[in-house]
Length: 249
Figure 1 (cartoon, helix red, strand yellow):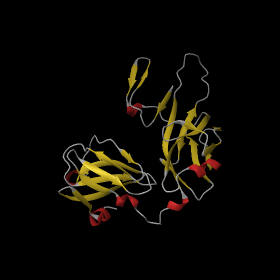
Figure 2 (cartoon, rainbow, N blue to C red):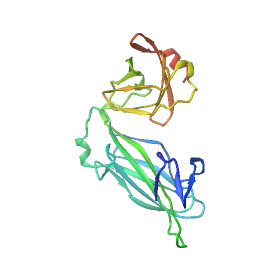
Figure 3 (spheres, rainbow, N blue to C red):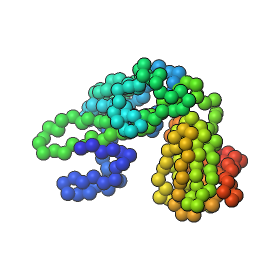
């Protein structure tokens, strides 16, 4: 049985429901929540670990394209399968193939890195085994769009009001994930907003949960950190309030 941790809600076992808080813990873990492959590099190493204190596990790795279909290039995972002893670590290396030259050079390309644990065979019959899988976004970033040190390209997003909510435009060559949109008066409130990912040079309409007059956007950076962008809106145009945004960093 395969459970994707990002989509996990409930697991039926022997007619019972296990709530998310009681979900089985993954044995094989990854050292990051997203992967950035910089084009000037020939390869990239990821650290993985078997956190189980008693059992060895196999770690299976592969890459999918933006349609979440398994691919064998232009990025390659080595080794695709490895054994990790209890409480031991290992590495997965991602390499470029010649096909990488066919990727756009003026923007990022989206892939997905998958890591699945394979438990040892059960010693008793009629035993249900559960294999957990981690899937994270993998961005291939061409060398000629490498950002300058300290560059915060998310601040170049433009926000405009429309009849239903807002239109967010991404004029940058990078993918930008917006995790939340709330009103400035409710920045600590919980919402039902579904995160969105803006592709390079694209725009998307968003409809926030509840009334939002002065929007505060939360984005996720290269390291998985959460940061806010605060805007002041007048009529249909919204301007980034850089001083307010800077004060919260």
